[in-house]
Image (cartoon, rainbow over all chains, first blue to last red; front, side, top):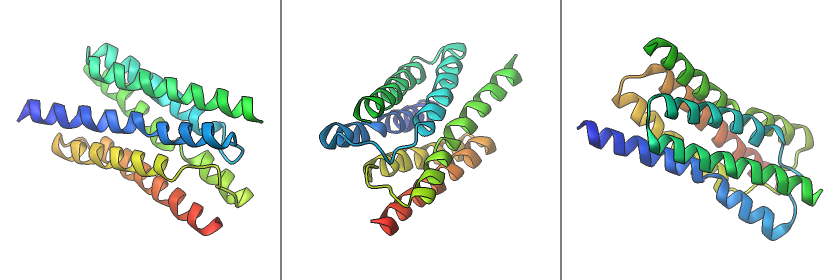
Length: 85
Length: 85
């Protein structure tokens, strides 16, 4: 049961971290991210950084990886928005 | 140490869940969410639903509340985008 639970949490983390991919693809295709608020990826990036530290403290590699990926996506979104505006 | 860790995780969850608020406010002000991909709030909503179930299974109220709030924000963003387009 415990490992099923853990797997469930890991999948949840992976899906949440991948949420930015369709936004990045859409932005890349349209070259427009005007309607995106800078604060969204910024706030989410801060939250994910805390999750990453949390993952480090509890030594959960999957939490670290999922959030490192999420933070990278947030950074990319901010950079793309800057480039396209 | 354990309760400090837990508190850290809870704050991380709260910040991540609040990430959508600035986007909702910007959308509400400008009435434009054209550049937002539907898939972003949709995928994040699915991930957060899994986190919510995970929180229910491990009986962590804060995880449940934070993700219920996040899911609500994702829903609102999708509805607002539909309304404004």
